[in-house]
Length: 248
Image (cartoon, rainbow, N blue to C red; front, side, top):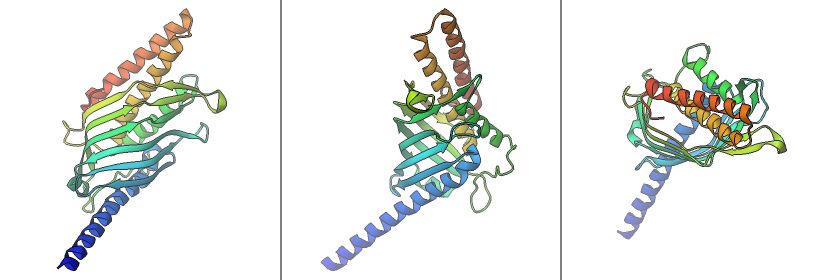
């Protein structure tokens, strides 16, 4: 009897680990396949583990490369990302993400006059959304239904933007970013819409964080320019709520 119970326990453990690996593989494969099409840059997710019972898990080693025309370094690295997903929704066309928490991400912020690498990355995502990319086939289920996402809670904390490249790069702390009920009102939004909403908030955070840092050393003319930049970032953030139903 004890041998049977032990065998049952071992089988349950194997099935649990197998299911965790299976779900993680789905997420990893999805990010590594769809990510480069969305951003038109290198996107690599090193690993993903998702509990089949609770839906909680961790994404590790997510790196997104710079757009064309910028340095060969990564635009940002997220390290570890905690996610809480409604597990059964992974097998349907409406994936419900209860929470995404990103702590301590690093962004590389390169600028050229009125442009930046992060802004160009956002532009790539918007072009994908607008159908200008010939490879813009959004992920779909086996029966062809487009997959949509709903993110109830998104938090990004302790972010750092490094201005410039190499030893001269200046680290600038970013303000925390919070988005609630992204895609809830719409009954789910596409991956590119979700990524666009998050990236616009990140871009606004980088711009306002940079402006805040510069304002501490800027003169009168510089301070005026900084205030204009911060106001533009604020307006960009306010536009997210209207477009996606999120809370900037």
